[in-house]
Figure 1 (cartoon, rainbow, N blue to C red):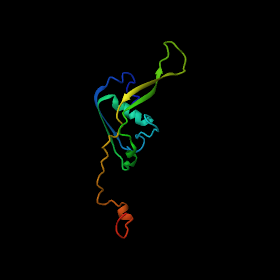
Figure 2: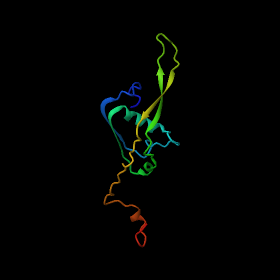
Figure 3: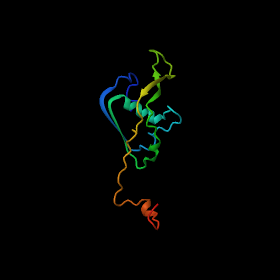
Figure 4: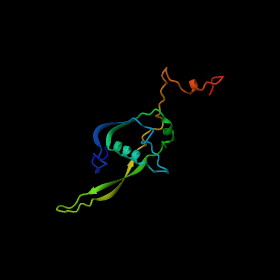
Length: 140
């Protein structure tokens, strides 16, 4: 989706609503880059996409949200780096593709807000550790 939308004029937000649904929110969309201010590639692409719309919502689903507890809730700014193809001059027969590197600073909170993990009650047929590993006093 990031490739479909024009890379220019990122400060000019699109006036359409966007609902982005991530069905593996504990996998690649988490910012796993090491270091303060570092952003992993997929996380930065999702944040860039969301920042291009004036009204955007991100919904992340996962069965195992444990990785999400390591997200820095205070991270706001990141630099998005991408390559933009330089068009060949008219009449040029060169097939060599040339690119320029563009860096843009984007202010965007991470995908997972600080108080946004919601645990669902297990269904009545759930067989979890309390059932499988019962001890004499039923405590784990």
